Length: 274
Image (cartoon, rainbow, N blue to C red; front, side, top):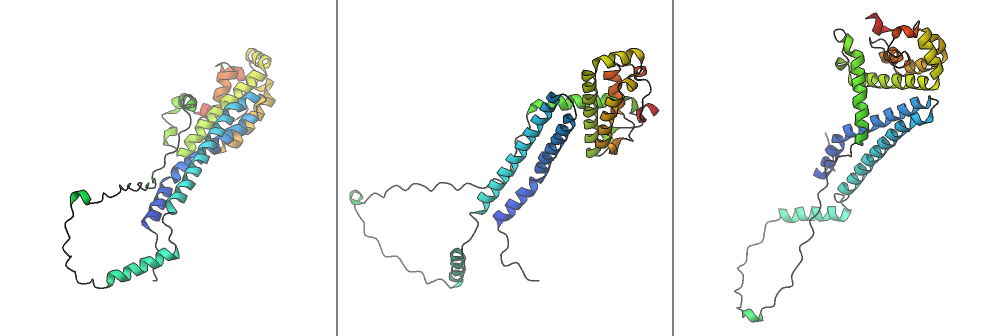
């Protein structure tokens, strides 16, 4: 098998290894941006425009982080590989140097004795400034984390999801699912909670009467159906899991903790069946 006439140099191999090491960080930034955009789309379904502001800020931060990663990577590759590029002249000089090394060295000659010179008459050599050190290319890139302002929201959502799953620990444990499914559970809990808060804010009088008459699902049928269609579309892969965040937040927010105030719940509730 013919060998590659121009094998990659040590610098090129190091650059490729650094790029592979940063692929996971780049994918994580991309996933955060995708999730933030999905939250923006979900919040746009609400009739209250201010609900979209937190999601937009998260999307803006994630986009800036992703752009910074790509900018650093592109600059790193450009600066690291430019010194390693050889011109035809440099390649020819390297070949000639190899030929010169292969030739036998000439016989050593005895140096001529030097004539002593008085110290006072010796010219002082001009000081030579040392060449500036050549910067080594960075192989480890670290991107800035997202602002810490989002951490309390994530912690609160995880606590809400854990509360909804606590009574089913013997049969169902979200921590045993894949990371993708665990993320779907976290987002489903958040979307269901925001949807119920919007309905309560838009229809306060109907919510109050529905609690008194115990017919919330009938009085708020249009709003509930619209929210449930969006919920089912986004989280269909986990709809058969025995945790119903949509039902849970209807009881907590609309019914004020009284499941009987809902009346007849119109959707299959896997959580209640267990």
